[in-house]
Amino acid sequence: MAKVEVVSAEIAKAEVVSVEIPMTFKKRGGRKVIVLPDGTHGNPLPMATIDNTMIKAVARAFRWQRLLENGTYGCLDEIAKAEKIGPSFVSRVIRLALLAPDIVEAILAGRQPAHLTLRDLMQPFPVEWARQRERFGVEVRR
Image (cartoon, rainbow, N blue to C red; front, side):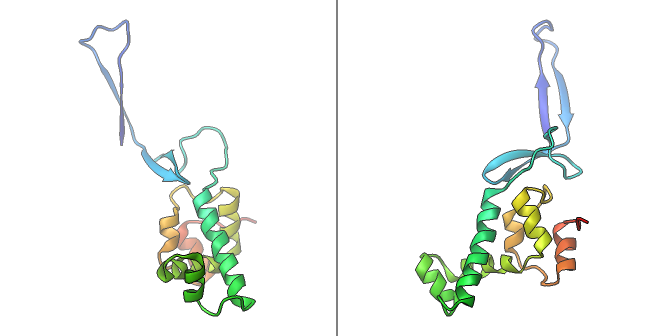
């Protein structure tokens, strides 16, 4: 919870007004944003919150999946060697290619829930799309 102290120039040093605002700060795409207790962003403008790191990870997953499918690479270890990164990281990122299409669309449009981070996506998740939506708190758009 953030605590804001307001001191007025008209009020003597003896008086300090403290205001407690229930909010947290989270990193989203390398930027800090205010997240309110109900999970919404503290930004009053209806602005998309595009998380570039999340988008980059999803794009990598689909690219690596395509490279496996077209035979450019035979396994995840070959991708890891070519990209000069660890095979464990490759295996965690490539799972993102299994995300439900509406979750991918939400991430690309910046409509993912405020609480959803790349760290959440890198953890094992269900393959079934309905359970993914439950897990990540994404509502189906109709």
